[in-house]
Length: 259
Image (cartoon, rainbow, N blue to C red; front, side, top):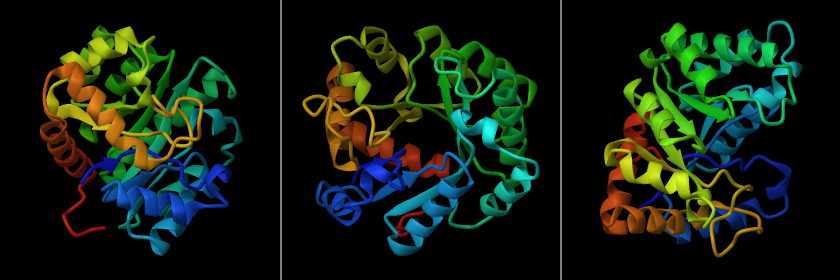
């Protein structure tokens, strides 16, 4: 039964029909959906969704876009949430030098603080890295991010960068982008990442895979991503799906029966 390791189900895009979205995911065979936070309110919302539906597993964190809004004491409030048993990870955290919605200096500061938080609570990270892979690699080495590990969510870097993240013990997350014809470099990455270090995710409501590109993305589309990865790697979707499920459970310490 496939897992979606990253979907923003607490967003407004799902406000009107979330029960139907979850129902479609379950009918598509999904067992669990990891819902990361982007700020304190969305992190709390993810926990609330878990309390309503055990298919949802929350993560808590401050997205780089929202780093500028992280006021004094935010890390203490976030830590209270991160210690909660139902919270699987610290995320979505990282750097985004494409949009620069938050000053880079503040993004870096908030990232460092959240890596240290991840180490304190002993939970993995969900890392956002857009046009900032060299900087994140350097920070992870300086902050000993390999001690808590995690996944490079929606990986968009090069083969060389993927190899460096793998060398630090991180997993690589693949989204619907891998189904796009324009994603030549990402398809190369999909060929070299060891099977035991791959995760799949929708990043819903964004980045719907072909043939739904341009539509609202949702967890029920996960099988399309697995099928494309299996095609690229010349293996069966069933075999790859089984490995990815095990990887997701291992990384986020999710036991069978937690859903």
